Length: 123
Image (cartoon, rainbow, N blue to C red; front, side, top):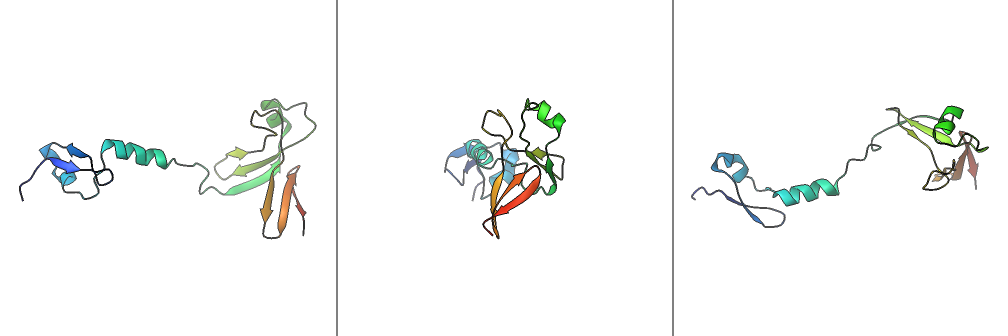
């Protein structure tokens, strides 16, 4: 079989030409063209929260409330601190107009956070 510099994308079937110096690339059965490589990257964004562990759950400090512009708000929010220092906290809306509440469902029923403490309902 003669060596050719034509290769076919294993995903879309598009033919591509590679320089003969790319012999290892020409021998691959799972070759992806640039378009499919970019699409594959776009489909799998890396989520920085995956694999993180919760290090602490606590009430939001006054300094944190002030930094969000929530300093005069009588409500507090819960802060979930991850092992890499990332801090997660709920907002009352997508604009960040004030602290919100975090709710969830566990094996034992529904729960919510208030001032950094878990309160359970429906047990």
